[in-house]
Amino acid sequence: MSGHSKWATTKHKKAVIDAKRGKLFAKLIKNIEVAARTGGGDVAGNPTLFDAIQKAKKTSVPNDNIDRAVKRGSGQEAGGADYQTIMYEGYGVGGIAVLVECLTDNKNRAAAEVRMAFNRNGGQLADPGSVSYLFSRKGIIVVPKEGTTEDDVMMAVLDAGGEEVTDLGEAFEILTEATDLVPVRTALQEAGIEYDSADVVFHPSMQIEVDVDGARKILRLIDALEDSDDVQNVYANFDASDEVMAELDEE
Image (cartoon, rainbow, N blue to C red):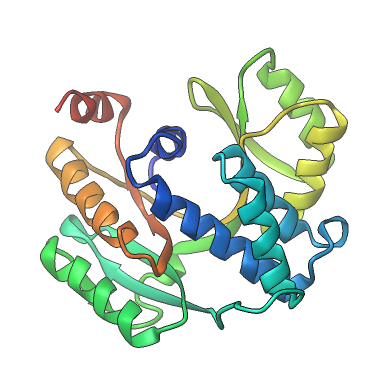
């Protein structure tokens, strides 16, 4: 999910020890399979596959599972599903815009589960185009701070297409154009800087500030959406302060 950047980073870290690890593994494996089907099974020539595999490895997905997903996707092994990407748009409580990215082999099931999550959590589905104009495709790279300064990161990515570097507390977030994600990631590698994740996302152009109650409600909706096996990513244009997030963490 993507709303407040610091929350996104916190959630990324928590995902590794999430009780729903099996569900997370399944989504990461699905990403690998689709990337291999779209761009081939050669990691060197398929940067989308490279990033999908890196993310899976950083989340401790077993290598055997990764290898089988690449083979299924590239056609070397039978059993791959015909996944389709479907976007749903809607609103959460307080008019927060929500984009739901699904990767599914059953459109009817995906639609029903997304609709149910919205209905049960104070939200509503909207027509295509209702909220998507509030988001643009961007690259987001998260770099852990361990032994790295903001100046180091800036120097490494500036010429490669890095637009903005944000200090998230325990990590730096680099914003790029979607087409510059691979060159910026490569520049980090060449500078010897490790990164936690590198993803093309839907980035909100404007955000709605929420209080504790508002944050609680939108996060409840996001959790309900992400509980569906068909939902790969949820994006929302809310902003929650560090104080609000700290208060929620205490609950």
